[in-house]
Image 1: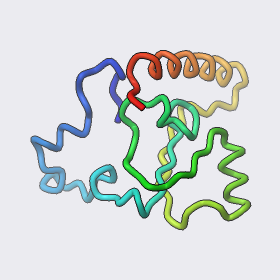
Image 2: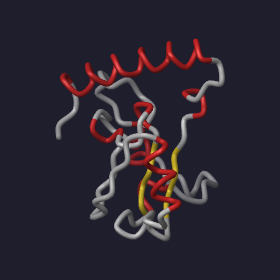
Image 3: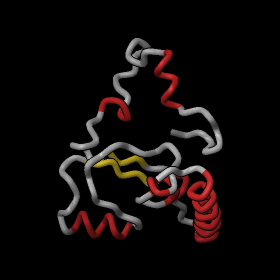
Length: 123
């Protein structure tokens, strides 16, 4: 999924030419996971409802849950409201302990999200 939103390429397209199983890769979650059974939760766009701003990091699903902030996810866990099966995708480089790095990344990502949503995302 990691490619510039302006790129014409989708990283998953490599598997149209190559067979990942023949290369020793056991599985490709975006092809092999049934996202109607496994809830997909990613911090894409530095938010848990990143599908709203993501160009490619989306899955087809019947799940209706949506969480914006980490506290929303934590509250859903505490209330036992999350589905039994979840695929989490994290971007640890986005989560800083340094307040200045956290704020810088937050401002940059929020600006990027606005541009992506306006120019590239088809809802």
